[in-house]
Length: 375
Image 1 (cartoon, rainbow, N blue to C red):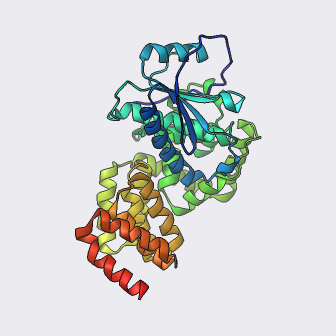
Image 2: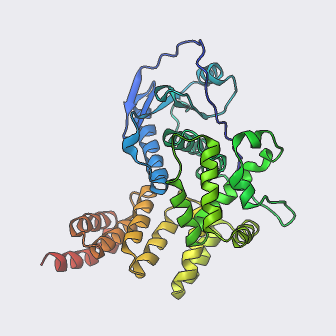
């Protein structure tokens, strides 16, 4: 998998040629400019989906955004290259988020060949990578370096492998890094590996690590410098965890990394045995391996439902649906869980959707459930 190095750019407005693009489409969170309105509508819908996935974890207040996030699409390579060179004086393949001090001038710039069908994994991963940077900096202009590096690589499907002879920094060192230190140290060559590994570990390890990570997002401030936000998050981890155990768990995770398919198979073995504690741990780890795949969310939702943690199950099922909107099993599971929460009308909607998507499997059980519900 190609490794992506984050370019955190504070752009300087300079005199440059005017690029005329006639079409504009405004989605839920994005305003997209380009030449082909159909393409812009499709890209806006795709970016809105990514935004929902990001915010399902970070939970920022979207009402704080004063305007939509700007995106500019070029279908001609020469025009894209000229535009990027005039903005940042660099050659960047495929996509780049450019950060200005003024919100209205910030934009994600994408090269998307005409008639692009969405079958280029490298391009799709780069768009996810750069769109996360745009998302995060819309709320927190100066985030910790490990957060923006780690999550951008995580959502961009970057993976790394380590062996027992690799020297891995301590978690304290990774949590302490800021962009200036990283650029002045040879460790920057491997920093994207370390930041991705820490993020992947925190998302797929023990429940306590995930909880502290999620809570730490609320401590960042859009008014802080990167150094201030870095120090706040580092202190949150240092004061909440036994660092010796934390470091040991992190190293064990790094050196025992397994593929997504291996983890799903192992999780299913534990799940079918009824060993939900071990199944949950494995599916959380699988979620960290491939955050775009709906399968871990489905089984984590089932585990939470079986434990009568219905609110938690609701989050997992809904997050899974963001990734697989036409999943009959997810709609059915969300419908059943909604009944447990007492949300009967919403339950009926999802149960009907499940029936429509897979009538052979779900028509009869849904009819029986609704008959009992409305009698």
